[in-house]
Length: 205
Image 1 (cartoon, rainbow, N blue to C red):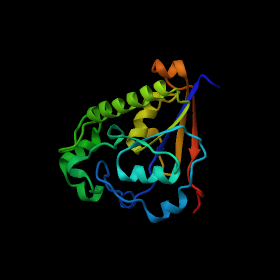
Image 2: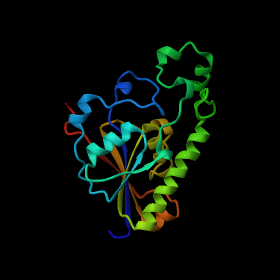
Image 3: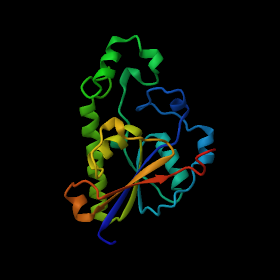
Image 4: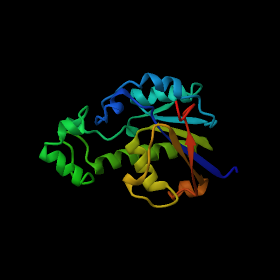
């Protein structure tokens, strides 16, 4: 329908650091070799692609949307984990401050990193830029290539039903497409429809 707007949220492909389960915020990591084979050109026919400016998102976007030059937004970066960047749970488990963060991740701030409130304000600013561009250019279908934490935040705010931040399953093999009426999106309402979008050429490969 002409009065609807779709925004698809995609997480970047699996990286070498993701495989090691390290905290990967603003530190970058190359995609696993297998991702270059599994990520295929997306059939969504998106008019505009927005992306985090980090390499793992830009590389994933090039694989999925080879014909589109993304609008790069710093605001779409993952949370900055500060001194914990590149470290694993095993590296940090004996750190008492880290344990406090695990107990209260929405209030405790990683050393030299971002608090959840700071992360939220930054990501919200990026969302506002996306919506402004959509309205100015009369875009009906767009995609956002970003990170797990960013997608969880957007779904918590904009999905048609309420779920806790950690309840959303944000895998590397699928995305979420949210659909609004244009007036509803302009007014900041929750979307009217949410559907999963598969990305992998083979979920078994």
